[in-house]
Length: 452
Image 1 (cartoon, one colour):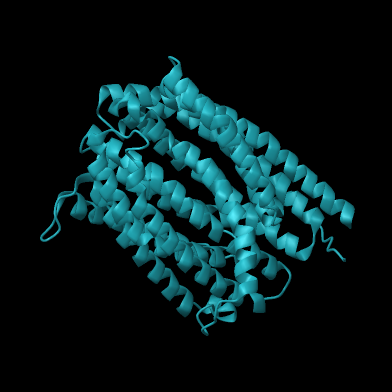
Image 2: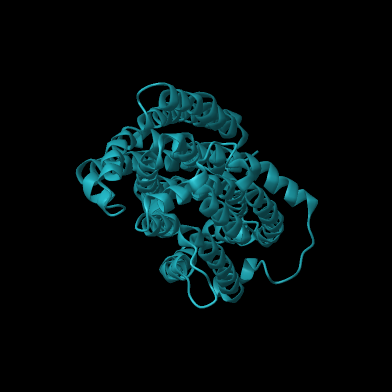
């Protein structure tokens, strides 16, 4: 098997990464901003509304990211076809991804419709159930749009066109605020639903985003050579199988990681509304900042995937080294930001003294895992670009659900550490994931180099 050995430089790769990172980062911040806006608006209603949103989001986010994570397979597949100079495959990959996304979205919607049945079993206080239940029923209606949008986003970004997705995400972020107000406070025939109304607003917005992106891709001149809407294409078992084989482990890996963060609100719910609300604020803050290494990881998937398609292992290693160094710088900047401005950041979320005091304390634990988090997500992004997804899936399952989750529950409920126990579990889990994923990346690079 012949390989390409064209030389690249750190400066060139850093420039290419930032060309992708900046618009992807804005997109990630905008999409994470949906949850931020929901949390802030709910927090200004009451601690009850904020806690109900925390429980609803705690179940919705893992399900949404599991199914959207599967659709991330579109990105390395398109990047590989682009790097291998086989554009005829790209349109087929995009069409088949949309088929997969449509059916996965329906399955996700049905799962969310059934989720309220779990809340009493999980020990969620009865006072939170009505709004949490309505939120889950409402937001499930947008799931097919969410997964199909993820497929089109992966297609566009892998081709090197992340900016249309960025512009659309920013417009959607602005549109969410009035939509939330309508459903939270009522307007005309729409009744006042409090924080639960955020679910209806988000579902409507997701459909608007999908149709807008699909229309732009259909009309955009840069997409015409690989136009996914040019012809109707039946389901192709080969591509569906390949997308699912590559994507399902990605979705599970993301699910294992994100669910350990989001379900922490449920673990802490017996400790009271103040604890859950403070935890939700701290998670919301760190989730916004996590968009920085996550954007880097997406850019690494695209760049590594392109060189993987070219079989240019030297350049691929260069990208990885530049990416990990960049992730380190980002993590240190994030740690400094959280340390110096943690009080001011928390004040944006709540005026409740008890909630704010605990949230500021929990943010200190978030500072402790920033480096490990940046390294593990960057390594995972590189491995996705190399189409290695099963190993990372098992690594994240062990790190988060066999190590972090039991440890967090034990510390939070059976010791005096309280909410901090969950965060200590997260730190340990992220450390284990970081070590194992970096080791996996080193082994994969060594294997490819030896195969030349």
